[in-house]
Length: 129
Image (cartoon, rainbow, N blue to C red; front, side):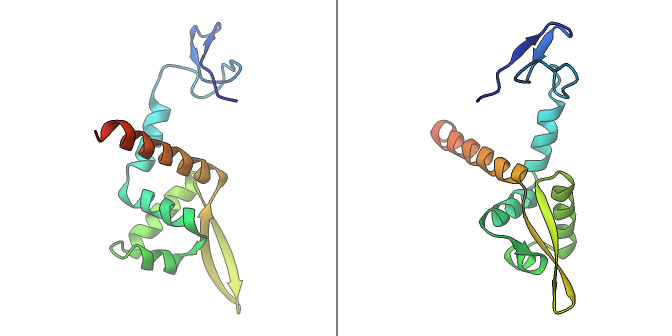
């Protein structure tokens, strides 16, 4: 079921909830929520990390090796940011009494990938003519 914009009688503004819920965070005309999302995806390494994790669950060192031009410090920064945004999940795996970090996309991350594919398709269909 698609989300439909509805008119909020209490706040007299457009609401993005299926049923108007005036304590819903984006129940106004402010585009802060959209800008916050764009700030996540506009970063070069964030998209590349999401792309790698879309294909496979990956350990930190393996991810760093795939992103050859990215330093370990930058990989750590972006992974931590994506974990904080609930796009990526960090798992601690113990092998032979050694702790390893493994990363994979959350449900939110998978939904983000679908959205990014739709943006890419839209760009190819309409903007690259």
